[in-house]
Image (cartoon, rainbow, N blue to C red):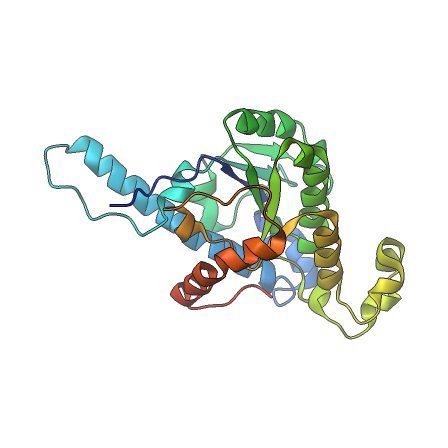
Length: 270
């Protein structure tokens, strides 16, 4: 029987899953419809951590009643989140905006966190030591998710890639667990009138949304993008070698990602 132990070479970075960006002050400035992609990403993450909680319950039962028949095994791949080291970031640290969304509260409570004062996690006190420890333990892939795709995910993923790619770390962004404001998905030409986007991307703004541009920049910088990371499949298999190109990684994971979407009954946030 295949083991469901998580790959030892995977770690997870959870960027700013906080109420401020889902239903708190920042979210209220834009409205619920605008932050719906961010709320959807949080909900999808909650599903994965729901599997985590079921797996923990199974393990606890096994330890308390070792002489009893083994409980039904947790869902395939559930152990990958139990065993995967994770770190959360917080932009807000005080008041109700600092709390995780209710559906993630129990899952995120035991996970260590660092304060991220800007868009770049590399500038957060405690992040580099945490990642150094993971590298010493054999981590070779850091999966990044959170909000927003166009800001903190974009900046942080590239910054980590620049700092650690030479040491063999692959940075992967799971787009199904990322979110950005609805306006940032628009390709209606408003991006071409945005001074910030024009400074950042120049002539490439034309015909693209802010999310399109963020994905383009991450991909060009060497960050690997996947529509949905195959957590369930990786509960039974090792990650591929770090040298694989993004196209090879996408091809390898395509079938399992499709199956995972079907199981959830919903598509990605995009």
